[in-house]
Each structure stands twice: as structure tokens, then as C-alpha cells.
Length: 513
Image (tube, rainbow, N blue to C red):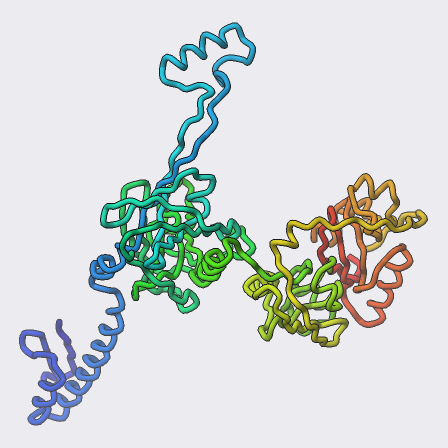
């Protein structure tokens, strides 16, 4: 290491090398006692550079020198999981000869001679990973690792094996809880707080990739709060190598706490390319606690259909910002009993602000069944607070509401508005669209492909049930809502559109295109 400074004169020439000068602040201080003013200036400057570089080097030492001590400490709690499933055999030589062929008996005899069991049941096995969370033998893994298994065998780091029984599963988060009976207390690991995991933090994955046995890989947290396809998704993305067989294994922080359960990878070829996903431990821990206590999950249920508030929807409703969850439908349930209405915008749930629909779904699902919560909504520009006692989502999803019959309305002529050709629903149209008798409004019979309505996804067969947050039963109703919005100075009109029974709000501009 060296520093070279050259001035216009030989007197300003200073060369310091590691060999000639120790590069320590205390040595510089001793040299300063006899230094000339110019030399003193360069020595003090060098001292500041050294202090700064020392600080930067210390800050860069966040990477551990080795993961060996951590791996040795927590490995005994990580397990390999082998499952066995009975699969029904084929009833004939499918794919070889056509059914009923005169050669069918010949090929069946050929299969039997060559050890192909034909219609006899056979065993299928699968591999995965998991980890022990208590000394009495509770084991966490992915649901897809053990789904449909007849037998589950747990292999421990020390080499012994134990059979496991299934306590419960949650397909929504792909989590399963197993139990083994051991003669001695088992080594286990604890859940950490996944909300504290930051992008850039070191993490370590452990498991049984590709059936190779216990394996360790390290990386960093690449991203947080990833959603893949589930309602309750909260994934940590990591570049730690995760492959098939790692499913159900733990993702550790540097304290040895579990911050995620390795669940999926993004890959074009089936192998790791550095994009892996682990379900956040705070989600997993709540699921595990319920599975341990009830053998099933028990999530809160509000009883509404919702969509995100977009910028154009916010403008059409006169909202200050595009935040919250817009209620599109209120079927029979807790929200209806508390007085919630379609068109309400949920701003706060149980004392916490609602950012969007995904956030609200998670907030409600994580709240205990039977709890009475305060829900703040924006209704026609005014704030109201509702007290709602939550039901249970699992029970609501299994219930099928009975349809109510209402008298039909007369059929008026069709009209073109907002790029849409509209006509009120008739009984025949309801039958053709497979709509419930309770659905009333204007049916879309055509959409101008050059219109904003087409750009925002409206199609033939959609039904407009509300405009400007008021029911529309006739063309005249829609025309009145358009006129009211224009008089109020609104640039767009909010429509409630149903497609196959599923509602959503769409804001269409009132200005002519």
C-alpha cells in the first residue's frame, strides 16, 4: 500500500509506502512532532484517510468468515422426509395397443412376465425436507411433500429414522405439521421474526436437494413480500441454492432462527438459477399453532368481495388517494349484518390501515374467529365506523347460499353509451349467461373495440349493476347517473360490472373520445 503526493517543488515531494511507514495513526502522531508545516499537512491528511478506510473495512466485514459453526449447531434439527404412496395399477396395456385389440391379452402376458404388474397396485415414493420445532417431536414441512402419502418416514441428521403421523395441513400456505414419537428429547430450532429480515441479509438454506442427503447453501434475502399465486402468500425471495428435495426445509438467519420455509423456485429447467421462495416464518408460525391446537386452520372471515382502488376509480369516487379496498359485493355474512354496503372503501381494519386488497385479506385471515373488530369505511365521501364480529372463512367457503327469486322486468330498447351497447336483463338472457335471478342491471351486448371500455376489459356478456354507486335497472337510470357525474364536475363514472357472477368496479371517462 502506498500514497504518492507530488508538488511543484522537491520540498513538497512525499512518498509513503507500507515498508517505509507503518501507516498507523499513533506513528503519524509521533512523526508530526518534528515535521515541517507542509509535511505535517500531508501527514494529517493521510491520518484521516486511514481512519476512514479502517471504518469502511470494518463495515464491509458483515459477511461471516465461515458458516460452519452455525451449520454444526442447527443441522441436528433438520430432517429428510421420505413418503410412500400406493398408486393403482393400470387395468390393461394402455398406450401399447388399442383397447379390445386381439393383441391385448398377448401384451398383458408380456408385461406380467417382465415384472410389470398390470392392474396390481404399486408403491410410489417421494423425497423432501423438514425441521423439528419442539423436543417432543413436532416437524414442519410443505403440504405438497406429504400430500396423499400412506407412509411418512423421517430421517434425522444423526442417522436414525422414525415414522411420522400427520397432524394437519394448510394447502393455502403449503404447510404441513407432522409428529414423531422419540424415546429421548429431540434437538429443535425456533422460529424467528421474518418481518425483521431485510433485503441483503445473509441467510442459509438446509435440506435434502435432489435426494443427495443433508446439504447446506447460503445466500442473501433478495426481496420481501413476494406473492406467487395464493391468497396468503408472503414469500422471502433468496438466491441461496434451492432445488427439488429442498421443499419443506428451513431458511435460517445468522442467529440460527427459521425465517422461512423453502417452498418453490423460479426456473426454466427445473434447477436452481438463484430465484427461490420461502414462506415467511410469521405466516408459518400462525398456521402451525392452529394445526397443533385444532388440527386445521381457523381464519377470520369478513364476508365481502373486494378490489383494489386504482387512480381512475379514486377520481371517480372523489377519494383523496388510491388506497384501501373497494367493496364490490356484500353477500350474507358478518359484514352484511354490520351494515357494510357495496361501494364502501375499507380504510382501516382493527386499528390498522388497509393499503390494498392483499393486505386486507391477510389482516382478516390472521385475526381470530369470533373477534369483534372496528372497520372504518369511506361511504359516499363520509367516514363511518362499523363493528363487525368475524366469522370463519373455512365454514363460509363450504356453504352454498340459496338463490332468491325476484320478478322480472320489462325489456326496453337497447342504447349505445360509453362505447357499450346496453339492454336491461331478461329471464332468457339470465339463463343464457347462467346468472342468478337476483342479478339485475344492464347487459352488455356489444363493445366498441376502439373505446376505453374495451381497453379496460369490458366484453359482451358483462352486466352493469351499478353506476355512480347507485343501482341501475334501466337505460334511463344510467343516463341519470352520467348527468349527475357531469354536473358534479367528475371526469369519470364508476361502474359495477359482473361477469359470471363475479363483480368488479371499472371507471370510464365521461369525455368523448
